[in-house]
Each structure stands twice: as C-alpha cells, then as structure tokens.
Length: 336
Image (cartoon, rainbow, N blue to C red; front, side, top):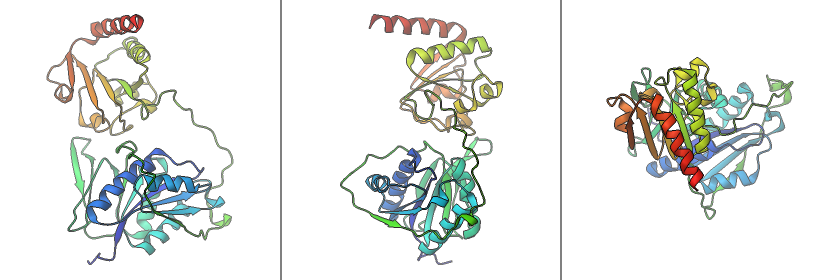
C-alpha cells in the first residue's frame, strides 16, 4: 500500500488531572530523534482537563514542533472509551505515521482502544525505538520469549504505526527555551452523557519516600539473598547510602518488598546513576529494566551474567560481605 500521505510522529500523553508526567517529556525527546531521522515533525497530543499552556511550551522546549491540546471538564477522569474516541478522530484526520503512548496504567488501556478504532496494530512495552529513513518504518524493540530475546517489530502494512513505551526508557531531553512551536486547541465533541465512567471517590496512592523510578542510587537484591533476616541488611545499606531499595521478581513474590520496588520486564524501568546489584544473576528479564551509569555487582558466582555486564564486579558471599561493607560505609560517613 502507498502510505506517502501518512506523516509525522505523535506522542499521546493523558493529563486527566492537569499534571504533566515525566514520561511525556521522555517520549517527546524520542519523537524528536525519530522526526529528525525521517525529516518529519514531532507532534504531541495532550488529552485531559486543566492543561496549561506552560506545559505545552515545555514540550516544545523538549523538541515538539506541534502540541495539540484536547481539554474539557468531561475528560477530568480517565475514561478509555471517550479518550479513544477523541484521539482516533484526530489521528485519523492528521494521517499520523507513528503514534507513541506511555506504557503506564492509562496508556496500556488506551493504546489498544485507539488501535482498534484505527484498524492497526500496537506493540506493547517497547524499550528501544529506531527508524528507517527510506521506508519510514519504525522498529519497535521489546523483550520477548520470557525476556530471553529482544524482538524487533515493524508494521509495513498498516498506518499509523503504534506502540507503548515503558516509562523511564529514555532520558528527559535538555530543554531549549528558544525553540518555537505551534500550540493547537482541538475542539471536544463529547458531553457528560458520553462518559462511561463516573468517579465516586478518589483514593490517593501511597507514594514511596524514595521511589525506584526517581532514585539516583538503587540497592537491589535478588534470589542470592536467601533469608528475610539477610534482607534487612539490604535495607540498612540502602538507608546508609540514601538509596532506594529494588528487587527482582522472586523477592517481590516472597513479599519482602511491595511490587512498587520490582525492577525488570514485569516491574519498573529505572535510570539511576549507581545500581548496586546484590545476589542478582543478571537475566535479561531483570536487566532490561535497568539503565544505569555505574553497575556494581556482588555475587558468589563469578560466571553469573551480571559479572560481565558490571563496571565493578565483586565475587563474595553476601552473608559476610554485606555486614563488612555496611561497617565500612558507617566508618566513612562518620569520618566526614
């Protein structure tokens, strides 16, 4: 089929409570890089209620050429059916080449709804994006087969090309306040009667003091830590370093930490400056969620995959290493 009329990449960000999340900035940077490769525009669609022009200006500073605002009081609560209807109409009219959603709770629900209305596919939980300047095809890369391989997925037969990207996959771009872009208000045709979801009560989420997705230092543990008593040493070390505590799935399944601490394919994507991996083997299922400047691994198995990936690898028994390391950290802190 001839898709020459389909142009530009679009990022969709839900703003139901008027709060612009970091993943919108991350995806704007990714869309900018794709647009530069393809010679197209990077367009952002904000949908929700209470959206501020200053938020659109910030997206322009991060690389957006056009920011479309779909704002209405009837969109103050996320409703998949109504959000999808408004978005599908806009994207169909614009003949979008590619559409990127966040793989958050709303995006994972919204993307397939929009894809169904536009009769196209959607690739979920993408961790890498690339583009072909000749075919204008986007390659959506994501872990597959239980995280044992990376699958590259393209959509040569349908438009728009669509996918969801895991929050934290890309860095927030440096803002350039001198950039110019266009802010376009999109009329909303919905009424209150069109909304299928009625909010009766909002229960605020329990926010972690130092969430892993925002932490600059993470101390993470895996199945190499065999007893809950030993796990207290991990928490103690994290506290001394001002770090967040991360876990692999087996530790989360044991209930030693809440799922909010789980990192990897079935958990969160993290981008710390320093990642200290204690008793973690380094399987792709876990490491696909880790993007760090410095990786420190402690493991009693020198042949563990993480030992080759690490910037600093320590072969040691955690039962003796952790108490000794904690004492050294205490001494250093006391001397300062």
